[in-house]
Length: 278
Image (cartoon, rainbow, N blue to C red):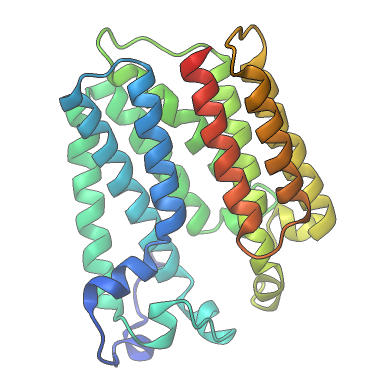
């Protein structure tokens, strides 16, 4: 946590601008909302009552916000070094103190909301959030950069299932597919930042593989996640889902900018739909 401290001299001289807009900009709001939506859809699929579904959704949202804000706190100097105009902390639009306060509040809410879903379920979700923080605090620069994503994405359906009435575990293929989706999301999410990361010393698995091999591996694991869930499925929408996933996999393979990550989110959504209807 010490890396989250001590940046005030660089970033506390803040230009005027709406605080809320800056916090949204520092929260990695696209991935945050995507993961929250997928958890919500899965909660609906396992029959959570509305009150428990709201708790689950809120816990996932606050956990993802804490991960997003801590990422920008940790990376503020790297983002300044490469002049990231899309990072409110790096540009001076937002102060470290503001983001640190928001992040601390998000952590507190995550703990309370997670444990409100049940002790075991809550601990599982806190483990998922801890995995995201571990990525931010150092694992992103190692060959194990994929591991926090696998743990977090694989753990979320376990959390949701344990929060359901009766508190049972999901079928083994569900967290396994989630872990594969997480690895794929990590690989495609890093693609736009490979050059900036290399310039600031980040050397995770995608950086070691290079752009083309990262794209190829991302498509392989994303399609493998769909195949895992399709085994034994008899839904009439199975064929259309497979066609959609194939098209999105092609986008992940050849797309530029944010397109591969959006394709990965689309594949994840298709997989959740497959899970609900199988």
